[in-house]
Length: 187
Image (cartoon, rainbow, N blue to C red; front, side):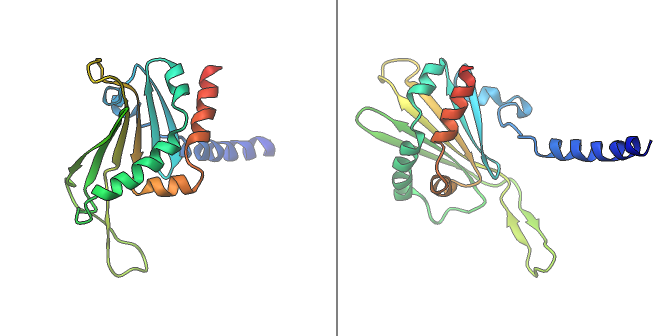
């Protein structure tokens, strides 16, 4: 009887901990699928609420573009040349990076914060401004400009801020996670 009582007290705590660590998918949240290109999508958790979403029509397309880290290393210096250092840090950015045969194109759009959110923490005198929207980096591998759609493959990085890319690369990048996810999808 004592064992039954002990189990009845422990199990809800264990289940609650397991549920609290569930990955909150950007794709399935509020039926967001329509916002991401591709008939199939893979979402990879990058930690700290950052995610990588791969949109494709055939899995072979994802397999052909497994070296995403090299593209991120190409994006960073290009973006740093055009990044607006005077931009309000609470604004969210949508960066589209198109890779073509002979050129790379960056299109940058910002969205102002709809409201100001402040966090008051114990032991600190001043409140902290809280950023409530993530940045999106949409990377597109372009096909022939006359072909529709004009891209073959695309990925989305949903980031707390675009500068998180540097930290992700420093921690080993995304290639290994992408290859493991593709391997699991093949099974």
